[in-house]
Length: 261
Ligand code: ACM
Image (cartoon, rainbow, N blue to C red; front, side):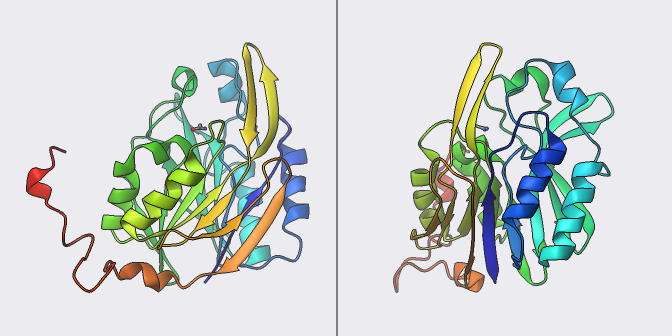
């Protein structure tokens, strides 16, 4: 299958401008799976709950409409971040969109830093989507540091992890090499670039979007400071083989009786 990412440089609060940048970056691109960054259309650095609510949408809002169009144009299943409103709750979510329709939303379960001040922690189970025969698991940014997340998705049969990000620390890209290796899954981490200085926060996002193979190879790596698109071919079925040599199946060899959690 053809999998890829878009690394964009959003302007805070300028959804139309940010949609247009993604449209330009994806001109002529065809793929089976495309991953966009966390909060790719709004920007990241909110200063209040009201501000997050103001930029929020339901799963039938204009970000969903944009992604539905994009899925038709590219032929791809698209996973990309948005601020999800549901009743009084505000979630840091990703839309999962395929063939012009919204399949689901994933709500980030591990909130980072001040996200805890405006977002509600995700309340839906980690889930693997069977899309055209490929098994896609979804997590968002800081979820990566909890190895239970990728492990759970891998145990549930994920072949490819779609991972929208707004990374501000330098660790994730290297960590994904180990996470992919220890679960024998592929990962597509889509990060953003640029800086946001708002209120008392001043974040620089680290780019370096990355596609990592089930055997720990980095198959694609974006620059740290510029928008970028990459689409590559992978054989996602290779992740179904959990043998790392003739004697070790990394899932069957687990000794769960010794693990506390
Ligand atoms: C993050 O979770 N956006 C660092």
